[in-house]
Length: 384
Image 1 (cartoon, one colour):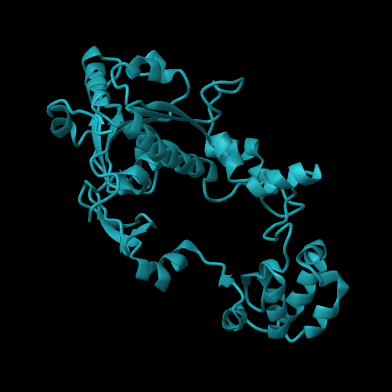
Image 2: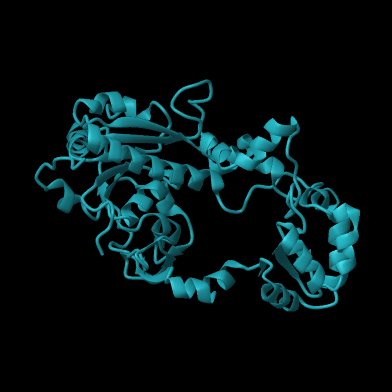
């Protein structure tokens, strides 16, 4: 398969999640990603459980299709190796605290003359400048700072973070998208640039509906559990045995809901005449609908709503969704052999290219696995 970023070389100076995720997205699309790691333990994600035969499956999930090179950047010889690799690269990704790469002599200004076409992407908690730029951050603290935790959970419950690390992975997505855009510009103009991607900015960027609600009303959005501030019925509902999700986001779907539950009389209720009014009275509406839903198991209602064309779904665990026939059809779960010989599985890129799932070209690397292969190469010229 000819991949879109084939021929592009990326040097990655990253740990844990946001940066490695960005690097993996680029690698999945064909870029050669060379991951620079400290010889003493490497990426700290390597130590995270679950460990299969001593190799972290968390690390494996974010570092396929990459090569690992170990360099101690405090040693002049290793620093020179890094500079040589950067000189031949098309892009560099780093997610250190602002100032760390500068102290190592590898900041954007220091390498710009060495590699004028280089796209240099810095991922950090708050950005490369400003009053919070020197503060560190993890996904939890950025979910707290960004407002995500203020709208997550039940209305009267304590602060809750989203179970998926949104701040890390939204920053990684923004970084990968921005890097590809900048590579196109570098190829056209012959000049690279410095991209500043912050976890705070990324999480605010994906909160467009919440920020616009504040700008439009002057009021802070609030926690609604699984409900929606502007649509109803649109949440998790309790059936006779368990919960299921159902989203009737417009008037036509609302009419279908009323027919399915045998309550066409609700269509004449002024409280439920529009999506806005249904959202305003959604607590009463939920109670009314759950009075009907409680008479049958969730599977019954999911089948009925699917037949009526109303979006609905079971509340899956990960074991359930990974075994779903749609996931199997898309070939998203693939076998993976770790460097220690352990065989496992992984969720690959969800993007399909011309109807085909993107391949795992390289398994996640052992620490320093590619030192000889990469460091003994002849100097490379950037392709941008």
